[in-house]
Length: 586
Image 1 (spheres, rainbow, N blue to C red):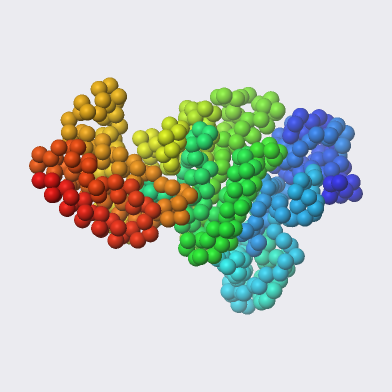
Image 2 (cartoon, rainbow, N blue to C red):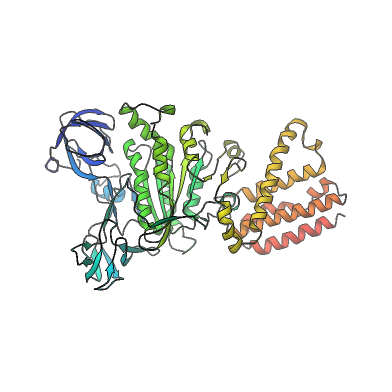
């Protein structure tokens, strides 16, 4: 049986028609985007269109068995999320219902319709330590106290953005539930550890700034060639099986963000299962604590109601903005925005709206922009600095990057990591095509790499890009006449490019050492290959045949740098060995 009862449903209106997740109701007193409860079972939905007495609702649950004449209740409020301590180490569905709580309510892994639960535990008590005293003046967004949410995250209790603020007249200290008042102001406003916020409305910030610090991912091809900034946006498009999900898992595990919000939007259930099983066992590389202690998962898998898919992206970004307001750097993984766009397309078609390209709604680009523009590096209203970095996977049908979702995403994001099916078939992972990918953050991030890694970071990266570009041009000739027909210097360039591809661009996500590569190690691998390049060309100029240069024993050791724990000593020894063996040839 559903947890909703007939007594809890007030007959504001009645259902006129049902078409999949789209329900129309008559006589309903509601506004756009209000949350309503549909039918005898109280299925959650949202108002998406009002025309005279006819209100159109997208229902976030399966509507089979729902028929005309059943009641519809309006809450008079938009779709909101519960914000407060308890969101870390939680797993939600697309509208922030905690799946573990729903499971215990139903006493089954299979959830009945109409079952509901608040996003955070309203009964659990948390240790509140105030940071303000009686007589202090506080304004909207100011921090009034802290709560140890997990071993990793200190939750900052803030004055809600819609409060006026004023003088503190009462402060509590100790253990309280999130609904109990912990700070009272002279104007009568009572501050609790619980906030609610509409998911489709961005939380306010004082200033959006130009990001200057990279989101270090531990993936060589990303950090080395195509970096993303903290507060930046990135897209990972690619066909089935090219590694979008594994790349996002790697980013979620290793990126140096304080908080990770992972949104599984319409993807396969086994992929979310892998996240749920893996993350509790992983240690945070920064703190050594469990990775789930700074992670919030939102699971709306492909077998879940399609309408909730449309809202799960907004649920995730709102939670991310909340932690950003505390001064944290948040990384949001959306896997995948294509499934989100497909949900919009289905709803739009049921509304009989004029379709745009490939049947997607005409407002597809606007919705994508609204979502990605909520990312950024901000000065918050309380003077903290925090960021939300958004990394969205795109699943173009057949790997066709010219389709609308990919093209509209490209116009918005500043980092493009193009996954390539051919590379994946050759078992080159991550299968990011270095000829198609790009980052528009390079120039503004180079000063950070110069200061924190090495002075010639940008020069080494440019050298690698030039070699790979030259290889791309030479490959066209090789396919026509063969490698042996090339001049020796071009044959040597192809050999150098091969080591760049195999030792630098490839990385084993399942190797305990190679799964994460620091910027220092990334730079070290590149300099080792550059050393081989310089010494090899000196030998070639001295008359050494290219076959002998390629045959030196030290060169293959370049491919083993990634798996070395003591990589610094290994690289220094390898550079010396390469230099010695090549100079012995002339």
